[in-house]
Length: 470
Image (cartoon, rainbow, N blue to C red; front, side, top):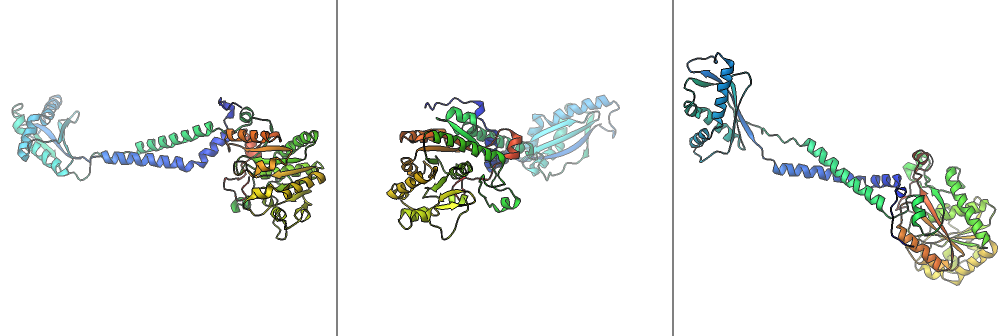
């Protein structure tokens, strides 16, 4: 199959994007905090506090305590005085008065509109220097202004004082908020982009286009814990179609899958079915168990064997942990016979062979005459033998079991395994000569928001599930 990818919008799953955003929410918040702190640090590094000393003066005629009779004329004269305070001549006199070559302080004089008042401000990085400069300016302005106005003088209305707080207070709250939002948005956008471009099966349409084989059915998400107590205590009850708590849509999807497999295998006189996946936690054990139950409902005689000797899970799915029970490894090690490990589950109406503990060197036991004899016995006595194998990417055990099987299906969990790895696994199955029926898409959200939240909510499976399965 040509793996060149042509992206389509129907491959986008809103739920996968939301899940990725929620899963990486801490990264988004961390990015927002980092941007916030970066702006704060940068602004603090560049911030230089400035102190402003201020005085207010009134323009008066010499020899008179009142302002000029004409307000417009007074205002004009005040404007000229403001230019005097900003002149280089006065700055040189101030520098000489303070014993310095020059002054770097900013001197600003502004006229208060419709008055004869002048506001004089001196800004400096040193509060004491600002005060000394403004005092010197007040004391020396007369030597400059006398050349312009011999009949006008300034009267101090408000004396200057040493400033105690910076006049350019750093107010970066708005910039911090913008930076935080931008940082969060940038990381969230990157997460969304990676989620969309990740080459996994996210929708049925995407699966049809990218998977190299037939899609048998899409099994929706089913919540494991249906009660508040179960959610709080994380009881992780198994999801079996025999349970009254399981939704109708989940049961129907499993039964449809079982019916299609039944028709397919009956026509070809096949009995041994392998249920496997590429990666861990894709749900193969749950699917294998439910397929066995669905076939038993149709009156088929089914044997379900857990051949995942490294990380068995079926005994947890069925919650069968009897202390006196014999397991598959006991039979393969010749410590028990077939009848000792074969159990009929009355409630589920299926026969089972379980494994409880993982064992080393599983391949040696699976590729043994005893394993072949067990499957041959199942062929003679049962309508179907379902083998729950290890994931194909984890070990070669699944490939060892293929030579004993007639048919195989691959479980593909939504947005879990790279499509290329899944297609490689299907090619491996075909190369062994086993009939590959197709893919079962498991734990898929419906894109219809209402139906999804009402019936097919995410049911708590995680990549670190203790059972090793979903």
